[in-house]
Image 1 (cartoon, rainbow over the protein chains, first blue to last red):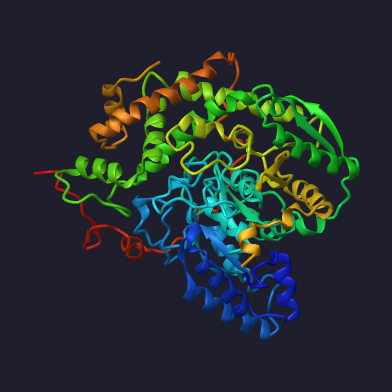
Image 2: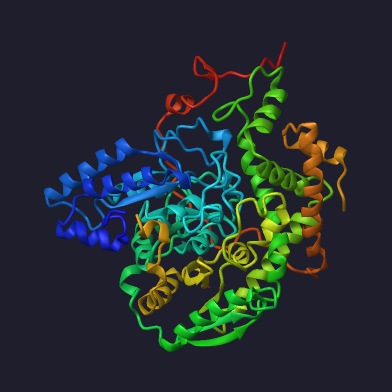
Length: 488
Length: 95
């Protein structure tokens, strides 16, 4: 691996500022690494020519003395964010021919900040999955072990950062799709508060749960990226008109006196004992930095999974009705009539997990079942939010494992949707309540990464990043990367 | 509550989703195990609890009512499977 690509985003920023390397040199090194690691299947599209052209422009801007702090830094986008003139597939056959006519707001913001896009990252189809195995473009492999999944749905984003193929990746999280893959790949991931980041140009899965965020090596790098993407957007009326703090300047605040809540329900007998001891080590570090811990209860958290698997598919069945073979996307050949065109375009264009969720959602919303499913799930959603409100009256942040165990093997759960859904036990309630959550490195178990999760009250991203940064300064877990890469 | 093959076909029709015979069979057992998992929420007492539709109960921000979009019909239709004279083509609906 080149010496440039092992840097963090903050490291590359320093290199560019000092003039030790140009953006073109950095971009070339990443493109070479991406090409050398095609086996991981992290990228659906590599935008080599565009990347080199924008790196060249970035270098000219820098030479003219007009560079911002982020001019010329590399990034890659999850293939769920629309990118003008570039394939935006959402991991689906349905959109395998879709060249987006516009940029997502998040993509525009990175462009305007001078970032160089390396390409588009693999993902579970329409972000529905926890293993990146539902992608039309094939599974992504975990850089720590090619026989293991990288998690999902942002599996390409997480694996690319872990393999040092990009220092920063966009990602999205509807039920854990940023945090779980971050945990499985030994990276740092932040799912912001619902409304913190514009969803304009993000291909919708479940609109009351979806939130765009980031995966990087460190909390510091996440802070740099969050500064760029946070804030209200006129084009997304659900984006919040709430002031954006300076994330980077708050990273080094003391966490002495910070109260960390440990939810009883997340530390019960189902938790893998080795995962538990890693998390206990994280707690010990927090305590040594002056934080206090308190036991809290999230009484209804067990019902988060069933409630989620009503609400998310219901919203998905509605959102995905736009894919009809008429205006864009896949169209079945030789339809005999309009209904046949709709039914076969959708039947052939969607993969099996997407179809399952559309069917569940359609069923839950159908006449006679609405109260038993959708309304019930929304009532439970209220109870879960109240649980969090109560917990945050006793503590500043909640700490738990991100996942019950480390990455599972490819194929291990792909035939059992319920087992796959239960993977999200620690992450899913956060989305129902719209709260921010981050996953950060917690060492290795048998050579595979473990992650711990911090969840905070709405709009407390700076507190989460601050706490995680302090732990990263006291540990070296975030500096580990797969042996295979180290030896190249 | 357990679904039959006929139920699946009916829901698939509502969702405008063509399923093959083989897909219907494999989907049936998976959907039923998902519904069993979902049914566990019926044990929660929710009487009098107001449904929560959206995580942030904030007032939506309204923009000024003015035209901001330019006509990008050609750009949007570039991605369409079949167009003619600026119209989307579909199989004949009316004889």
